[in-house]
Image (cartoon, rainbow, N blue to C red; front, side, top):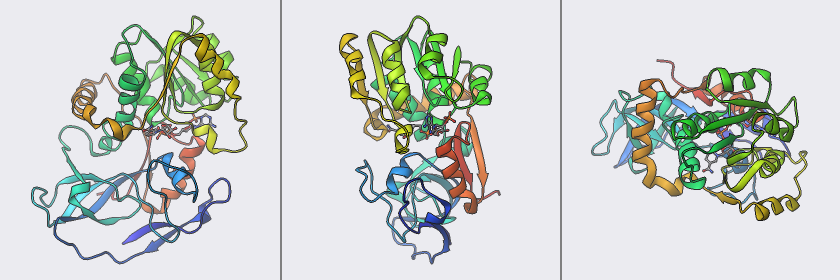
Length: 334
Ligand code: NDP
């Protein structure tokens, strides 16, 4: 089968030549295993950290010469696992390859009748779940809150902005890079205001769209966005620290920690979270989000690249903002 491997560790920003598309033999299918033809795979910011040797990460680092991995969704071609029939759709962790031999214990059967298969990797998958956990648990969102979401046109952000509203926020504003994305936040996702972080300083934009301040900041970006949010937060505000994609880029100035005095003065709670610690919320999340998707109250945004051969381009593009919504790679068009 075709796989994408890590050819070498990147020096600075990752380049296409750091990866290789190779042919690899599949292992024999053993007891408790599934042969899966991947239909879709996800590319995620966390994969950027996993390319590094030393980065302390919450999951394993990729190994040079070995295939990458990550979330994927596919059809079972052959099964040696009780309870998972041939033909079932499964979500699992062996992306970056066309066909995978998957331990059934690490796979979850999903219902394509409940939502489009790709949604199980996007708004109904880890992406949407991250948004839900961040709002409900890390930010302890309350009815009437004024919410700011960064990278709000991205995968987690486009879900977080819409979910904040559905969960009772009084107003939701977001930031994104470029005029097209900023317009989309208001026109297609129903946000109340948008900051284009390429066209204006975030603190100026935030002061314009949320002149009375915010109660909750959902942080996907870190850096200047976090500083601007700390300035805008009201007394007792809450910050869900989800990710800091701006900090992958060593060129970007890291803001001074002195800004945290704002958290002291305003009794702000900053809470980091990792989505996988909150599986207890998964059933209510799936039930509610599937309902909102069906009713049309929640829009699932995605950008799709075709074929494993374009997965690296999709990944590197996502890191620079080439995506609207969830960046996915379609591995099997049938
Ligand atoms: P996105 O779909 O949001 O893609 C990344 C986006 O980041 C780009 O589209 C781009 O949008 C924006 N971006 C890139 N560089 C910068 C920069 N320097 N300044 C501002 N924006 C930038 O990715 P995901 O939705 O998958 O991930 C969003 C965040 O959530 C990431 O920080 C990720 O690490 C985190 N995450 C955390 C999890 C957890 O458990 N805590 C789980 C999953 C994700 P634009 O063009 O608008 O700038």
